[in-house]
Image (cartoon, rainbow, N blue to C red):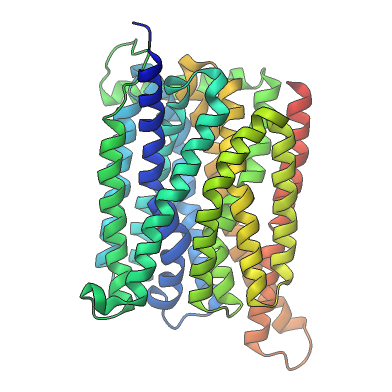
Length: 438
């Protein structure tokens, strides 16, 4: 049966609403409260570079597990045409892990990392199937705008709940809570409720199209998924634009994800107040909402390559500036810059890739796409943590006589931030080659 315009709009808005739902995790938990709470509550008393390394390696561990599983999951979904089913299963894992953060008490950094890793696996695994549904809810000529719409709606939804959570931490007594720590723990619960509730509404509002194929047992799905992965990897080598783009995406999205996950931790290492960091995150969300929509239209008017070059150039400047900043206003300026380009990079990368791959194998190819993104999330945070530890050791061992440990720690944090620039430069260069080969 031919899909009507009304059905098309309903499917698009239902698909975008899931971004509204799960962005609460990306904002309140991943970018906002978890890094702060991990450093000040779950890693209470630890050295700032050590807590950064723990956080970075924890993010890397979760990213590694998702990266290894992503292409197999995508192939499994394409075999059984079960993208929504797998999306729901991983979303349940993410929602459950987020809610469990409430029960992790002070000093239990190991438990915090394990529960957080489970939530990230759920969040990222669900996104494999969410991204793969784009060609099934939108027509090819709509990819840029619909992809941008998802990110824009996500910025708005995540920002609104984050604003409520910030108010909870500033005025805990108004909400019947004893202190800010209790408010942060309850914020994790609100994210779980928001994600689960709106996610259910979103996924019930549209159907997955092209439901051909047969249902399979889990063991058969996994076996066939591995077989399909091997076949996909063999074929991708012969699709030069796809191969080069995946390598480019792997590198530059590393920088984007690293800044998302580690910016607050970096600000804390430099001694900025928590309130300044939270305000900056709110700026990213509410600037990101209109900016993502704008990039969707610019992608159609200027072409995706030009827009991505622009965004990666701005990210390079932001990272270099961040490594040298001294004042609070600079952190706000950097937040505004990130808000302008973050959604554009994510949305246009997704729509660019959707146009490269066949719709009937979208989950399979988006499994590889998400795998590259998650491998990037391994390298970036781990690199920041390890560079910070190594730089601190070198400064204390070979630096100026009498350098205070605190000064060495802050300078080391700047080196760790500066290292991210390499990822944007190399990623941009490979994207140029991919676009020339298209």
